Length: 308
View 1 (spheres, rainbow, N blue to C red):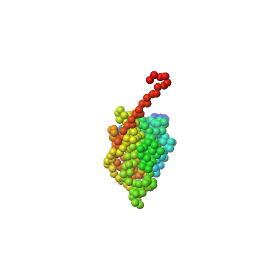
View 2 (cartoon, helix red, strand yellow; view 1 turned 90 degrees about the horizontal axis):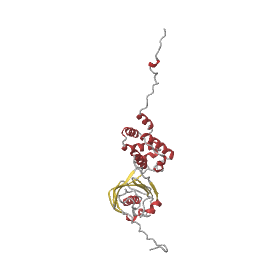
View 3 (spheres, rainbow, N blue to C red; view 1 turned 120 degrees about the vertical axis):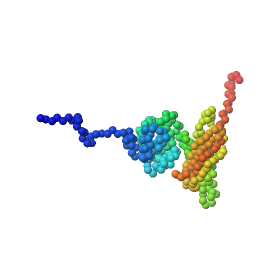
View 4 (cartoon, rainbow, N blue to C red; view 1 turned 90 degrees about the vertical axis):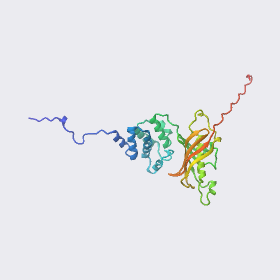
């Protein structure tokens, strides 16, 4: 007599059973080279779709592809950090960042949309608009000293901006203290120090440039009116604190953001850093401004034989 065995009911050999990967496990595997904080923010976002979690996720993904010696720049939490110049991100690395961002945030990014992403702030605003279905923002614009001097009412040697950028959240600029500045000959004797009043002047100049380049939100009824640079003047400054002495060799990184605008006043908050150190904080810098008068219409000269 033979014994028949029903193989259908036989237990599977150990190791043959495959367990399906959960969405959380898949996310952890995709972000395994990111910081724990990035992973946890991504897991929370997966279930809640909370937009406030996006900046931490985006910064964490960028950090994963940046060389370790450049990562402290990301931790400064400043939106003006440039992807190429400051973080060394090339086009191929950018594609890797985009692919992982698409996977984690479940958003689609077109190649031609990447051309306008120059700074960390650009990336964060862009992703936020994508997730919310909002119109994409205007790209950050960068200006060398030649373009700045061409439009500014202040001129060398009283222009304290070597370069600037203007985006949706305000303006950023840089000024290198060379030691050759005329005012350092007497401030102070045998101990050249950048005057605090001129650091505030530099912030004010950046705010002027931001106004000229259209960083202010448009007021109803004045959307198409250009601002006249000759009408921009300093009005007041409040909540100023100096945290650091600045000397020749220091590179000042300046930033201003609009707080309130009501013609004829525009109020900004401003800050200056040297590396990762705070140098100056100004809670409010207020400027007055006016719109340019429309060009008068030129009367047409009648042609010969034309009735006047």
